Length: 133
Image (cartoon, rainbow, N blue to C red; front, side, top):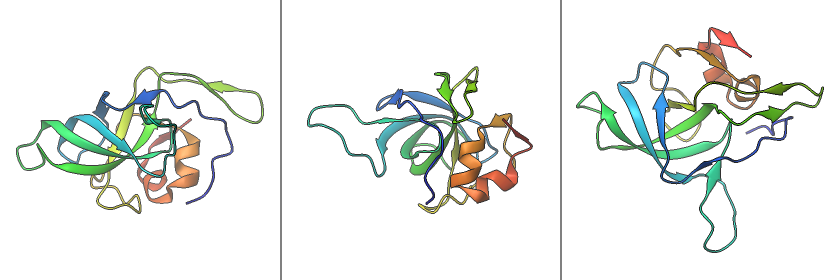
């Protein structure tokens, strides 16, 4: 997994309900845990764009509902700064549901734009994206 060039604020906390932006069958997911995150004792784990998370599907197709699956955050509302000085923010928080921990997406289409930092870290998700900001 490659490092991300931008400084991403970790603003999506455990317990957040996030929209899924692919055609995997999931509509809304509940954030359970953040993979590869270290934090202080008692602090809720938080995630930002490009992070791998574990989610529970709370709304969607009956076959995928009530399952715990990995996902990658592709959009976040909180703005973040790139090394060239530009600031990027999206109008919603969104994830792409994955098949495995390596970031291979379960769906075949990603709806809406994704951050360029996600495509750097997860090339399989970057290939499916139509719009990259």
